[in-house]
Length: 566
Image 1 (cartoon, rainbow, N blue to C red):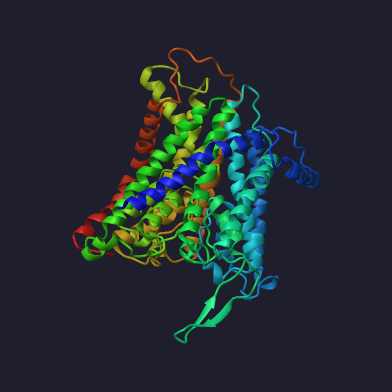
Image 2 (cartoon, rainbow, N blue to C red):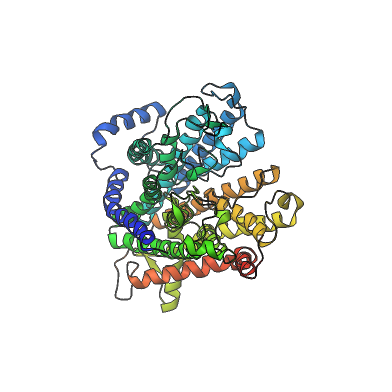
């Protein structure tokens, strides 16, 4: 590890902290209907969309209505993308004349982009037409991120409500998330990426002759615009197969830093929005502190493991750590920070091969997914996933002191705890059971790229990533009908069977009137609460997966030091 490596992480984090309050305040204004500096420009478009679609912006929804609207929109979005991919070969904006996708691959891809996962069993530059990339995948990058933000805002409204029982209007929240938050930042980011050399065109690919006399295909297309929302919306699906390791998507150390910043930006800002909406910004900073304590622990562990290098290649380790699978323009520090940012959120983009990381580096990435991606998590999904643990922590704290648990002046009772636990249980159920089946069935092991614990890690990582709606992969795992279906199911439940219980929990809290805090009220904005929250996350979340991780990256680590590789 080097001072320069730590410095780049500190600088990005310092800029992130500086932007958290302004962005959080801006999103608070957006989602509470206050005027912003973009209102004169965007409000006419917003009103026009409501008129066209018949949305009545003043209508309030309870949690069931909100959930049904979200599910209905998601179903239509899935059907649209599925149909688009099935007939891609017959549509325009396809200068490479790519054929339509098979039904299995189209189904898996549509589920993947619908759920903000962006898991890819294909190479984008040799599979997707420009129309599919722009009108299909990039569109879903916006709306899937918008849905996540809308759910988070609705959940926070429920926590902050004073007996009203309403969570807002899904259509208004989705529209404002896309128009006021995602679109403006994406436009600026895309312009910066284009200036740094990321392609943005509709030209056909070019075949050129290299200096050595060989032939090389130069990929073009609308890459910068998709790259911006891919990172900002914590989507992660690469325009090209190499994802953010490709110079087409991430050409310089500056773009690498920008993309890390974009990945963390909205999740960070939403913590301050939460504090503003509940009437106490200290609450938001407490959640921010818990999220980024986990983030820094993860980064330190990955960076140390990669900087230490491979014990079987001592000379390489002395020269600069484990550079296998990494781009020299980013190095160990830039790659470690990027992987921690993408697996700590629901992004899934990679600028290095996770398969080539040291076992401890891979273990940390895996744990980030298994915790439900709360360090700091995806856009919206990270906040409401963290609130699952907040509710559980308050309940445990109440039991410890023999007092009825309270959160924001509202009693946390059996129904709220049951819903929080239900949401938390989705991850182990739809990760561990499919992993066990895939490891036992010939269909699950036939496409593995490695044997032994490393091969098991490929399977475990695949289901951890898809269920966490992340989309990154350990690499080496081939796609077939079994994994098309199994990972698609994992993605679906990981998205909707966490969101719906949290909306129900918010609906339950929205009906309760808060009471004034007393002398014995446990503060949820104190360092003590942050430590208790971190303890709950690690005990409830991490220990659930310890036996499975012991068979994968932990066993891989000890066998590596014994001289065995897989």
